[in-house]
Amino acid sequence: METERANQALTASEIFDLVRVDLELVEKAIDVESVASVETVTTIGRYLQQSGGKRLRPALLLLCARFAGEGKTVNPKTAIQLGAVVEMIHAATLVHDDVIDMARTRRGRPSTNAQWGNHTCVLAGDWLYMQAFQAALRERNFHILDLLIGLTQLMVEGELIQLDRIGRIAITEADCMELVDRKTACLFSACAKLGAVAGGADTQFEEKLGEFAWNLGMAFQLIDDMLDFTSREQTLGKPVGGDLKEGKVTLPLVYALETASAAERAMVETVLKDRNYNAVPFAEVLALVERHSGIQRTRERAQQFTDHARQIVSEFPENPYQRALFTLTDLVTARDR
Image 1 (cartoon, rainbow, N blue to C red):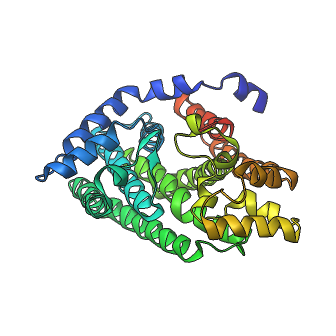
Image 2 (spheres, rainbow, N blue to C red):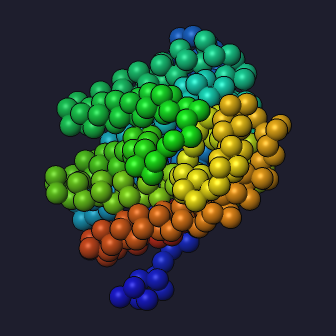
Image 3 (cartoon, rainbow, N blue to C red):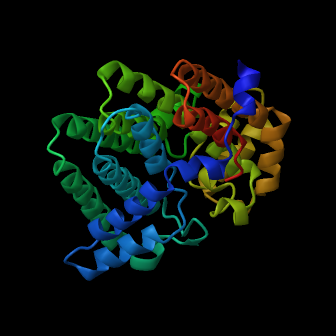
């Protein structure tokens, strides 16, 4: 069955082709929803929209909506509107994250806070959040609002937990998983559930799709944490090694520190204290992480989540949208940015 399914796997281009028309309509919806009465907010919204994001989250929502609505008479406008909503919420989180992290670049361009300053960007991020909810409210569906409110609370809690742990070296695997859940996996899960709602699915179908996407999101973020060490800046779109320089100890480093020497731990503590790689070059930290199997173990952990996602989606009836969701799991694990 696995071999047969692998032979039918879709390419990334084929996956996005399934929802390309809907994604174009999502872009138009974002463009409309991003217009504010204050010109600066509109400018920031357009800057974010043009920054070259992969639109993975709305694509996931649209695929789930198409999959859930297969064989039914479903109005696609709800999925398109909700695709714009989740992308606007995601954009708002990026704006706030960059302010908190004092980031200078995002997706290979100056970050919004570098362009417009922290004060303006905090307010612009707030406006994007509220505009996203305004757009969702038009659906007149309390379940949609419940999902979005729960999602937003989890993500804000995740940011607060991360702030509390900044600069600490004593971070555990469980600590990392808690953050990945709240900052990334919960958004993936909400996208799938919202897609299921838009496709007219029942509660059981919605929950199962949400579980699939949660595992997908966990794998996605763990690969992201790994790429922060192993990628190149031109590919990643932001400085490599940025997490540690911002005081964040992620899973590859957590695994490496389990067997690191006192001298190696002292190196990491120096970077956490200095918030730069002047005293300890990034190459030395990368060598430490590789030497103690931090990269390898993180990839293996991500693969466990990927395998679970594949197992869940393989239980669904097979059609092009189900195969697309199945193939997404491979693309997440194999990506280089």
